[in-house]
Image (cartoon, rainbow, N blue to C red; front, side, top):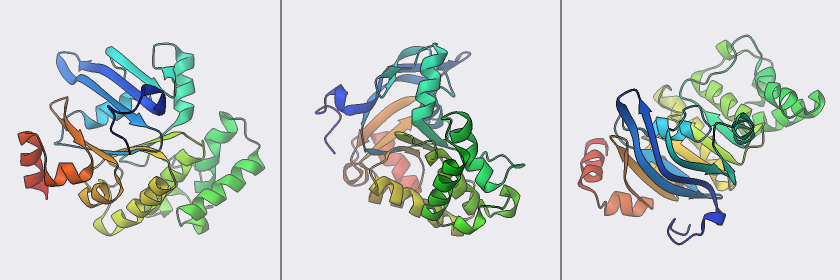
Length: 252
């Protein structure tokens, strides 16, 4: 993947310029400027409270930024609700806590948005849902309810649900942090297959093995600042920032 400096913005599906976010007096994001290319896999890491999750949540307007520009696939994220709706149709999101509808079956969880939002015929939506469940390795769970599944299975349903909207970008907010250790690999395997298929992905994660193997680029956040970014080999073997060096020394 070419460096973000070398690429023109037209090649980038996400463009962030000087993005700021406040919660009252608390300055959560402090001038984030970065681009993400089509098909690029970016892993965002850093200490708790550093702004990582807030940042990716601004990209589909789950959090509103107060200053700067965010452009997704040519659409600027403004207060125009039509732009927000358009971007949310292009951007899939997988959360730490699954966020499945407990009263709906796995099949209904996956087909709900395509039928309601994209007006996909029910039979077609169900066929796609089965293909996606096959892809994430749990086709046999289609008629079960979330409470009948393991955490790892629920997270794979959540990934299938996001993919059912045929997004151009997938955002993952610490997708394995709520899982038991033995379930983490099954979710990371699905994410790795997704990355290899060419999906543009931004992943907030402390899974450094996944980052080393799958990421095109890594971003280190601290206190609302993008401290350092670069390919995994640079981040792991020759980090430029003392803050990155310290953080990696504590988790590796």
